[in-house]
Length: 264
Image 1 (cartoon, rainbow, N blue to C red):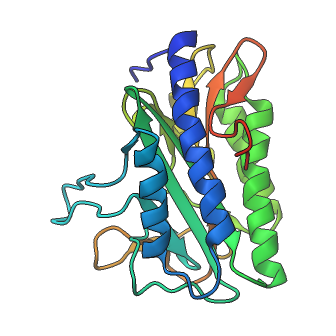
Image 2: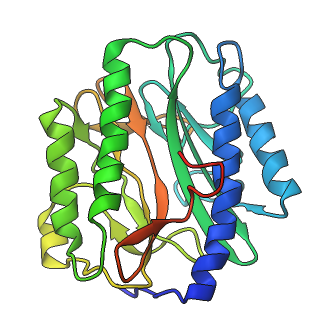
């Protein structure tokens, strides 16, 4: 792994990008109601970000296995969709849905990335529990992240918490380092594997990570839809996704995508 440590100047630039991301997610959470389309949410996110002078990180991203570049500013994933849902006029939010929104920007050369899951109108108790557990899994990571801690120790806590609630952690998609590019080393899993134990991440001051647990109500098995982007649960059960960009400092970590009035 070629992990690049960030200076305080770089972290402050990433925090400014994080303000834009947090503001967008706060606005989308406010307007995500029954009958709203995910295309409408995408337009709002695009306007807020571009008005702030930020570059949309997801729009135009290419996947070697897919002809179509990702067309949206946001990933908008509903119910059994885990991540990389494509915003669409045909995707109309309904009472009781779960909506996961992932969003990132680059501002002044530096990136920030965050995700939230929200209930649309009144949602059932199982979906409320799934959201709460997934958010708690992220909070566990943030509370434990500090210099000299091995990531495997944190990932163990994250996985155990999700599984003790009767849910499963997605293993096909993980968090990542972030800086000038959206995806940098290291890969940041939300579970423990032999691969992680063999090549563990020792947290160090100046590391900036996008930590993003995705938790499924059922099995952790996933599949990708015919559009080549949208990832769904194999058993059709709901999934939730929360993410923050965090910077490791000498005392612990700081959240770069939850500042000002826009904390999630």
